[in-house]
Amino acid sequence: MTSHDAVVQAKRLLRVRKAGHAGTLDPLATGLLIVCLNEATKAANLLADFDKEYAVTMLLGVSTDTYDADGSIIQQRPIDGVTEDAVRACAESMRGVISQLPPMYSAIKMQGEPLYRLARKGITVERKPRTVTIGELEVEEISLPVVRMRVVCSKGTYIRSLCHDIGEQLGVGAHMTALRRTRIGPFRLDQGIRLSQLAEGRQGIIPLASALCHLPAVRFGGLWLQRIRHGNAVAVTDAEMCGPCVDGLVRLQDQEGTLLGIGRAAEGTITVVRLFADAAVPTMKEEA
Image (tube, rainbow, N blue to C red; front, side, top):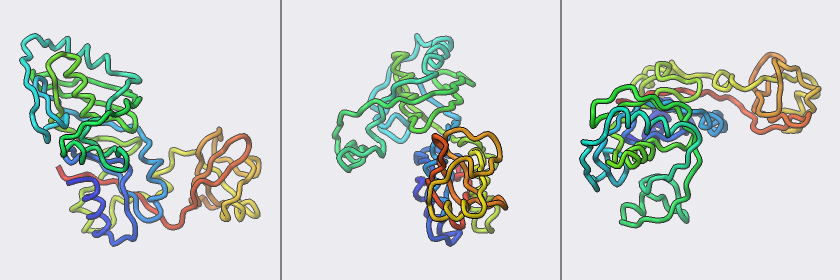
């Protein structure tokens, strides 16, 4: 199942007008997928910006064209000289800000065509390296040639490429054999619901106001509330602060605490980024 398939099923089961996800999962992967419904689709990009946490299984000594188990084997190398200490040291070197080359089998577009379509035609094109952040990389178990890891990374990180790069640095090659997303920002796998549960009702759906609770809240009343509702900028001094307000994104609320939209505070002014009507955000577990 692809992430798109999961969204289509959720939309059908819940009978909503619009639905979209906040961060793709590879078909090979399982775990947490955030699905935004109706007005919440306007906030999908904010939810996609969260760091992600994964449970990863990697096989050393075998390289594939997709960097994962769904691909074709292109090279096999002996791993006799690889030690557990070498694996841990290599993983340690991948922490922090790194440059990563996206795989050819990816949804990145080149002149309007996804790379994976070019790869299926046997075409390889030059890709630009991306800067990503590996916040945490913990080797949890080594049973050579299998390595299991926990990875916390920034948006845009390809775990397949991380496995491939570790294998190349060790000189034996590697590919990803299993991937499970266990966390997206504050949302954890145990909060999710399965697609099969959606047919039973709307349990597990999180109000958008709760999904955006990581943003500072500002409240407005009277004339200032009307200005916000019409998408106009308002001075920070005209807002009622619900906590420290620094430059950046904020939740826009009325005096009762109802979520109106998202704003941006900068240089003493709050401008409207998005206004919402009725919105909610479910978190889902893709079926294993």
